[in-house]
Length: 371
Image 1 (cartoon, rainbow, N blue to C red):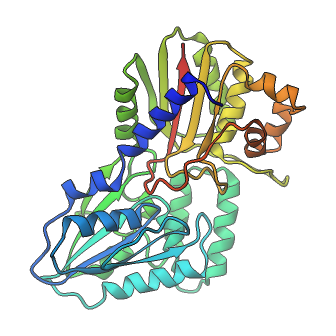
Image 2 (cartoon, rainbow, N blue to C red; image 1 turned 120 degrees about the horizontal axis):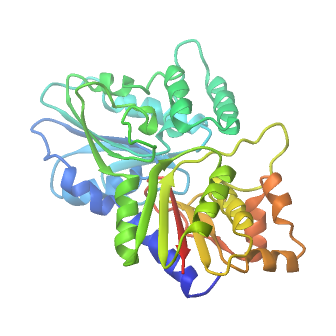
């Protein structure tokens, strides 16, 4: 979709993701290099970009390290090794990365310092099975959890129970060295025990949140320069249900106004074989049906990491003519929603938002423009 309102929404999304850029967020919270060894470790979709920010800030210092990020999210580094593994379901590279990162913090002394760079996606990228389990056990559980529609907090609690590195176990391995964690939150409520399943979180930890969903929504509101209401930065539940609810709210609202929200919705697949799509495109397809061609409403929903689900799109955009154009192509929006095939629907219309990896992750960005 190419019009002034669609371009405005793309700009709003860009402001939200830019506010969580590691180059902007890492330096102010990065500690000074310690007098002993300085080890950088990390995991998540933003881990490689965070490592680059550390290297720039610590120019001339002595340090080493290793981080793991999602396939396709790596960027060149000079001192810190960047590994890549699978997301959202772990693979053998996830287990190998976990073992290498544990090895990097083994045998440290009190004068040493570890800086951990944690962001969303770390749960899958650091996969070390607990005693008595094998990687395939974790893969099967992850697949079942992702299809279940369970909230991310519940999913990560189960992941921690099955892991030899999550839930503070990596933090324990760093002792007696000083440990400082810099984290980009992608979870509702910004609970450090849930971000990446909390590998470096424990009571009393030096844990620094450097980017959050709320801060990104506030940056988007500032960029908008108009009346804006932030509906919440931690909204959960079924994507299609939230789409209907926000559609009803938008229809009751008087413009000009911008409605912003964040959080992490879910899509419960059930027994049927799903089509292609993610929670943001599913939200938008439901929203479009609820708006039913309202002439004054446009909307964008996209994942801040640039990848909605497992497809190549961050999300999509809808406008007053979305359903009309769909019908002209013989597309039944309701059927696509039932089949969880929202990506295919918006792909056919040419309304996907494709950014590539943004190298950060503060969860979903949803914006509804009422003119």
